[in-house]
Amino acid sequence: MKFDIWKECPKVPLPSVLLTVVDNRGKTVPTAPSGHKLIATNCVRNENLYPVYEKIRYLSEETYRTWFRAHPEPGDIIFVCKGTPGRVCLVPDPIDFCIAQDMVALRADPKIVYNKYLLAVLRSFQIQEQILSTSVGDVIPHFKKSFFDQIMIPIPNMDIQKSIGDFYYTISEKTELNKKINDNLYAQVKAIFSKNFLDLDFLPDGWKTGNLLDIADYLNGLAMQKYRPKDGETGLPVLKIKELRQGICDASSELCSPSIKSEYIIHDGDIIFSWSGSLLVDIWCGGNCGLNQHLFKVTSNNYDKWFYYLWTAHHLDRFIAVAADKATTMGHIKREELEKVEVIIPSKCDYKRIGALIKPLFDLIISNRIENRKLTALRNTLLPKIMAGEIDVSDIQL
Image (cartoon, rainbow, N blue to C red):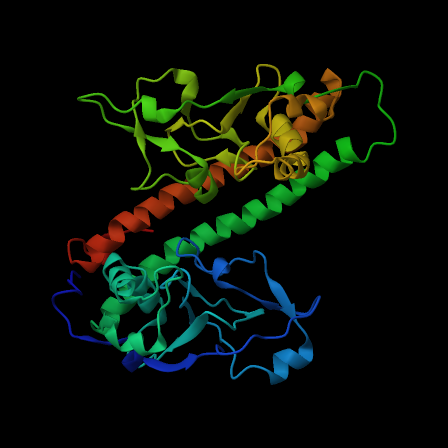
């Protein structure tokens, strides 16, 4: 079943396919120390199926019951109106959050449009471009509710809608499941690490203390503007802080020569520590790329990745505090800070015992993240072709 939804079916204004719009904008909601979750626009990202809970606030029970005009329901689509207009996420079942300023919830009319299809279409390049061109505001872009009439949604028959929507949802749901699995795995890893290293009352026989430079090498990246691709070379994406934060390189990433020294080429599973600007440490699973300056590639000839990753992550808050005290426009730490923090190094026998518990979990985290990158790339490659009628969705086995 092939069908070009952009050329071969009618297009209707977005409001005409909705039962209602949940809109609580207009005044600031009073918050509380705890209670019901209140998400903000930063929680809604097109790379996630559902909203994430980052920097959330809370509401009292009374505010939850009396302040809002309405609440989202499972299956609704959250639509960001301000800051990053057009970001959308599906509301999960069960729902455990509220929305207020700068976003609305769209409730699809199931007689007209399949909500999972609507989510996929709203995230398509064509509709995102419509939203971008319609938004106003030079400093903080915003999308007025009156602009919804200008978003034209293609409406094929329901069978085609379900084929497209289910394809998008199935892959997206698999990536969400992998994220939940990884959250659980990492919680186990941290618990094992804490029990064996951080909660010690005394240093066991054969154990010793050291610092981060005793267990790992921290290689600073190159000023990649000096290493652009040469004539005839296929450029390698450059890993900068932006890419590290988002977990992938994209079309806007700079390129460098693939002929740089091999130690500056990053591969899946490498540990990367951003020591300037936004300090963070992560396991890179975004494919091969070149290491830019302001990032450390962390390696060791003597210890496993889990060991030096967890110790670096353990001291990250201290490094962030040190960077915040720098009297510069961009906070950073110096290499000497790596020598000032303590790590506990177990005996070979105990290291092997602890590693037998942590390493399989750590390796599975990496494997799941790599699978998510490949699934996302597959979805983002095939979906436009399915929507354009170049691929028959029924031929795809998931």
